Length: 142
Image (cartoon, rainbow, N blue to C red):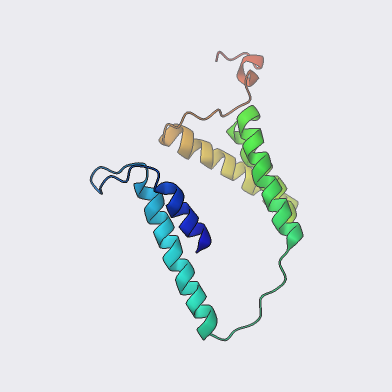
């Protein structure tokens, strides 16, 4: 709920608009509100419903996930979308001790192809797909 409150507070600095003509603050405020409501429901349920205790927080898994996301941002900037998604999935898989290498590689390739298809070709987002100069090195024009 604190994250939701912070989200809303930061979004209040933007113009809200209306449902017919949304401003840049419209979506973040609604997402923050829904996140806050969901957090409140989860909190109330935690006091009412009896259940098993929560397992320990996996600091290793959390750290690997955060590193994978940070590497994704760095790789996306310098090497393109395909390399960024491959690095995210392959590094993120290290957080799961039961991850199988072949399945992880297949998932990484599928997500890279799927993401390029959706974000670059279908939605037309101006994302760098390959590293700068990669296609030129292969003999293709830019």
